[in-house]
Amino acid sequence: MKTTLDEMLVFAAVVDTGSITAAAAQLVQTVSAISRTLGRLEKKLDTTLLRRTTRRLELTEEGQVFLAHARAILASVDAAEEQMALRRRQLPAGRLRVNAASPYMLHAIAPLAPEFMRRYPQIELLLDTDDLNIDLLARRTDVAIRIGPLSDSTLHARPLGSHRLRVLASPVYLAERGTPRSVEALAGGGHLLLGFTQPESLNHWPLRGAHGDALPIRPALTASSGETLRRLALEGAGIVCLSDFMTAADRSAGALVQVLPRATVEQRQPVHAVYYRNTQLAARIACFLDFLVERLTGD
Image 1 (cartoon, one colour):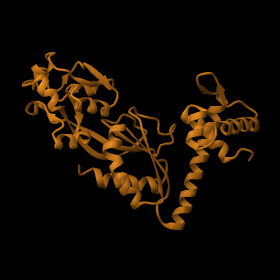
Image 2 (cartoon, helix red, strand yellow; image 1 turned 90 degrees about the vertical axis):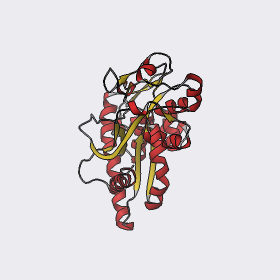
Image 3 (cartoon, helix red, strand yellow; image 1 turned 180 degrees about the horizontal axis):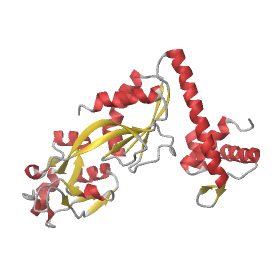
Image 4 (tube, one colour; image 1 turned 180 degrees about the vertical axis):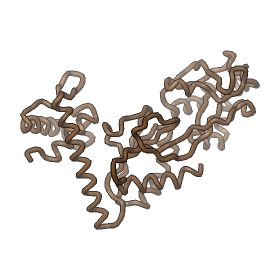
């Protein structure tokens, strides 16, 4: 075999990160070393794998074919190394890549990471955040946390419970703008409402009124991240509707208070850990899923 695993790893890292510079940072190598490795790989294969433009890198057709094989080989090597580690130590081991939206990572996953690492010291945990649903295969992700209804039928899922949605504001905002006493007062234009850029379903708040059990709002300000909206609400920028997992501490401290609790409909966001499962689930993934179920489903 002319091609080495290091060359495959560099090639996949360049594709995953979108640039030679980013791949160099991820692999802790110099940009020139990454460029030389790519050049050497293309020379060995006698083909062009990537088209280099001034703005981005694009896979050629040959590059797409080779990438699929390279990913399969790298995954097989990871699995083989983990199996050897299991035989030596009888403990789950290897690299575990976990993806979640930044608010859930910050408020739910990150606080549990130290406990998981103490329990499974042979697992190398990689935590990645993204506020949009990602392609698990393209990002070489083992487990992704999805909030809301699932739509991808190709994924296996473990439920991690659900969290209630509440309409909230800071005491500072309510002191300046007044507390809305009815859903009609809230929607009448006299209040600043904070909403999501997408999905639009998150801008239907669980408030009962003439409109039914879901109030469609017209946000004065939108953001793609729930954590950004939480921060804005804490600063008194407006009224927001967020899930309990990211506001429990704020509500306990009085930094955010619920608005219109009697008009609020019981609506919960389901949370799932999703993953691909081809044959036997890797031990490092299985123990992480069991850990999350143990620590989160009682919330």
